[in-house]
Image (cartoon, helix red, strand yellow):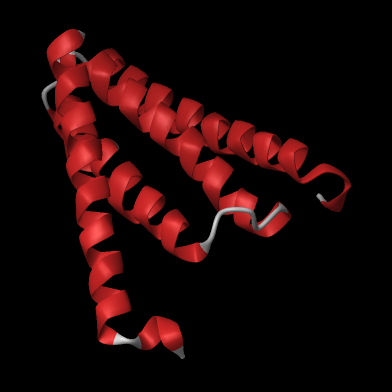
Length: 129
């Protein structure tokens, strides 16, 4: 019942906003460092991998508490990764092959990242996994 208190919920919302600020700024930095399509693929792949770690960590170990997981996944990772940038990259691709490559890289490596994250969480969890 304690986590339903308005101040606890307000604290969680504020922490998610701070995580979102950090994730959005990291994505902005990545976009300024390498070409846009590469930056978007990198943040989506890294974000998917970390999301896999945190989602499966909850299942296999439960070390990270719910509030911290929300701050990191809903705040930081949701702002780090970008579907809209991914969609724009496809729409603006100069050839069909480039558009297909963007789709393939983001989906295949993003899904592979989730599986890798799950593997990390299983290793952290030891035999319970």
